[in-house]
Every structure is written in structure tokens, then in C-alpha cells.
Length: 111
Length: 115
Image 1 (cartoon, rainbow over the protein chains, first blue to last red):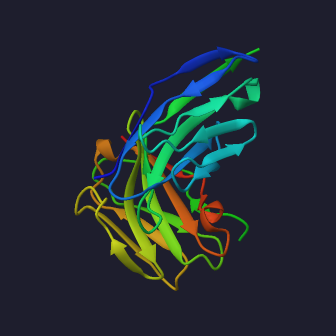
Image 2: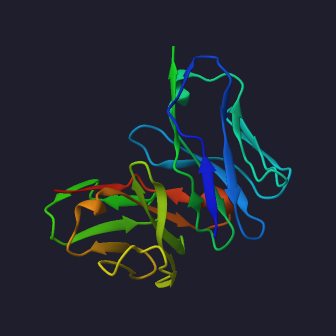
């Protein structure tokens, strides 16, 4: 079956630090890959996506590259801000749009 | 409506009681999904509707859980004889239109606490 494994948090960084949140997956077929973000008190929002191997998704300074050879989709940002503090979920889909999520990684950015 | 609306936003219930959670998707979205978000467990898929039918109910954790969708719009998730392990945030999402994955929209959820 499908599964997503992402690094446990919380990840604690100072403002302007470099961020990496690791995500690896197991899937049948060729999945689409996603990062969702959940800000405190809000619903999940799509942050970025990649639908085929070697695609790079990017948004708001975040980016992730679909690596089929390593079954990974690591999230990176060169310089985090306090406003990036949230929970980040890696997810995949191989079918009719049902998403399989990782457990989420909390990011805490201090000034 | 402009977004996916869920009600109530918070629900506290006694163990053994039944609860109903409501999801009002974006108007015109044909697909509707229920997920459960538990502390430390991430998000689990529960059930998927296409129109009023549910091709995939595989994520429902037990026969105490059921869901229906009427008129291709509002959906209700019912949990009978609630247990403490049912405490979680229940999220609804809908998908439709021509925006592809960018149109997959989540509600803010219902936080269920079983005491």
C-alpha cells in the first residue's frame, strides 16, 4: 500500500536559517506528491506539488523536487521567517485524489 | 460557498453518545473526502464520495462510523456509541472544477472530544 514517512518534529530554527524537512514515500504506480501546510487555528492548505519524476514544486520560497530514484520529496527553504511556523504535511496520491499523508512536522521559527 | 464549511467547530460528547459532523463543500465540487487528524497519527483517510455515492469507504475504522451525502452537496459523518479513541479533528475536503489539485480544499475541521 501507499505510505509517507516524514521527519519527526518539532523542528526549531532561528529566523533566516535554512530549512529541510525530509519526506520519503512508498507507492504503487506513479504518485503525485504534495506538501500541505497547516497554520495555527487554520485548515490545511496546499503549499506545493509535483506530479512526475524530476518535477520541482515551488511556492512562497519553499521548494521540493520529486526524486523517483530515492522515493523522496524533501521540503526546503533558504531563509525561514517567523510566519512560516506551522505544521507541514507530506502527502501522495495514486488514484482518484484520495491523499495519503505523513504524520506532520511542526516547524517553530524564533526571531 | 467560498470555502469548505464544517460544523460544529468543536464538539464535546460523553462516551457512548452518538455525534453527527457536517461538511458543506464548495458549491459545484463533485468529490468530497473525510479525514481524521489524531495527535501523533497524522491524517487518516476515512471515506470518499463522488456525487452521492461512496466508492471507497475503506478508511472507516469500525461499523460505528458511517457517512452520507445528499444532493451531491452536504455530507454528514456519524459516529455511534462514541469512544475516547474517537477524539480527534475530523477534516472534510472537496475537489472539483478545472483547477486540478489546486482546487482540493480543506475545511477547518471539527474537533471532537469524547469524555
